[in-house]
Amino acid sequence: MSLEIFILGTGGMMPLPNRSLTSVLVRREGDLFLFDSGEGTQISLRKLNLKWKKISGVFVSHTHADHVTGLPGIMMLTSQVERDEPLYITGPPKIREYVESSRKILDMFINYEIVIEEIREEKIVFETEELSIKAFPLHHSKPCMGYVLEEKMRPGVFHPERAEALGVPRGPLWSKLQRGEKVILADGRTVLPEEIMGPKRRGRKFSFVTDTAYVKTIAGYVKDSDLLICEGMFMEELADSAYEKKHLTAKQAAQIALEANVGRLGLIHYSPRYTERDLKALLREAKKIFPETFLTRDLQIINLPNT
Image 1: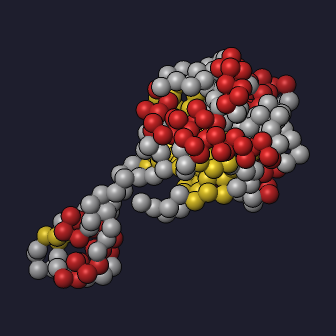
Image 2: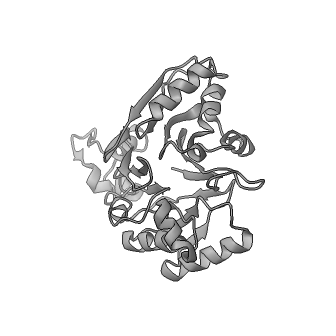
């Protein structure tokens, strides 16, 4: 089962010719989840040929302009296609006012239900039988949230040779065992899933953190993520400015990744002051702390393999 992360924009504060504002989309099978929607999100979606009508939810970190200015366009774009399911929009206080005032002022034609939830504290904000998305508080100049998408425990590996040895015929009974159901054979014997399946496997975990000062609690929320996408807005020489503006340096993002034992760290939300050469220096600072760090790039696609 595929889990893909699409980097739609990597910039902070203002868009640049080759750097749209921060936005990340996660695709799991047919479901799409959008994290922030900075200016340029629609363009990136089209360049990557992503089916925006499949977006189940938009999860907004906070209501500074560089994280939400792409949202009205997404809402209007979605009205151009048939949609039966609601669009869920989650974010801290002011996200409802922003969405509703945008609809009113722009006189939007909306032909589907929009469900808005405002949050301040740690909370599960989206859940299905297979995954959950949890929000948790960050420390910025206004209420700001991070998000963790985590798959629930998955069935173990199916061993066909075990099924055949126990006399389970191929077909529907194999499917039942894979779903975790016991089966009764024609001769009356009962075969349990654990006789055929390997041990349950942990699901994959993706975390999104942007616009925050360094706080110890972040590592606990994103612990053991397969991939952490985290802002690294400044180099360490501007640590005082980062602290004042409640942003992270790349080195601090790497420290969070180290404390959280994540698999990989992707830096994002770069200051517009940084050229390509600067970004490479920023990466070097982070890699000294956490070697499995990389720079995210606009239109980059990252696959998280099954564990």
